[in-house]
Length: 468
Image 1 (cartoon, rainbow, N blue to C red):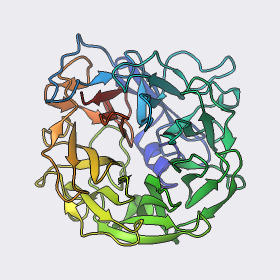
Image 2: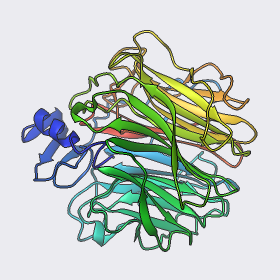
Image 3: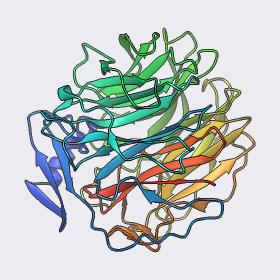
Image 4: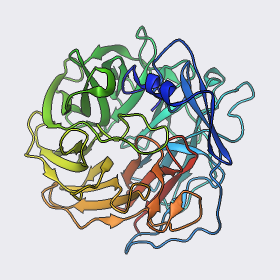
């Protein structure tokens, strides 16, 4: 994310940094300090962490793929790539990956400051991908881009949203499988800076919703394929702060966002509420219900990692019948070990089942759950945890075929054992980005994408894997 889960986040970054900090012999982080305290520390703006360099390649990529998986690969060998997301066409063999790139060539002749959103497209269900390119080499985004989201409607049209150089959430649409994109449209006006957009698109593509933050939390909406936008609606009660991590629009028009609900206090003191924010009247009114209350996240041990980095993630998946499963993380006690829970709902999040833990217990820290649903009760989910040690993180995959009631054994899909300085036989040094992506192709294969790196500062890369 770019601007933050709270206005206090960059204050923590300022306390941790002074001037230029060396993250590795080939990767440095600079902090450009300004008067605003809105930057969350991962992008650009008056207060920003600016990642640079490329994680050293340490030899050939060695993998040990899990049964049924093709093996993990890098999005770009020379890219310092952070915070990826993916989407698949539900009726054609197209898969899309986008990520925030902090190094490499300029996105446009007048562009001066990275990062920018890099795109790769597959036309064979994610088996192979074309060369990366910038999604929007927009002169108006000369100051950088970040926080990308992507979604595909039933007709194959592709929607992408990101934060531009003016700290505004913008949306662009492609109707030719990502070859060309419409001019970006600002989704909310009159708010000021905006952070952490989360995208939800109806099956037809006509209704588009973006949840975002500006101290308070808002949802913007368009009902003409993203061309024009109604004034955004504030959804959070003070002094709580919503932080979206999933969104879904049902065939009947019901809309649900899964969110973490933080107290607006320095250091995020107090418990975290996992909530569902929903509308049953096309976005005219919104209602929020509590799914669970969990402990404050544990301390992140990665260099430069903000205090709230590991907690408050709430992802959302839906099957073809409109049932929902919310996957989220929560500490066992305040700042204790952390686990992944799932809760089921059949009424757009108005009520939910009793939460069930699906990650290891003990002293393990689990975070960043990502879930997607398809078919009749078919859900796919991955999360990260450090069961192999504090600097030996991995991505673990599980699947449910009965609506989230039971789950398969966990499978390690971050199967690279070497190839980059941050990759080891037992895992990688640190997550790289506050979210990843998961998609199901038109043939039913699972496609997963995540970030891994030397530390929160970087550098690192975007990795992906798929079933076969």
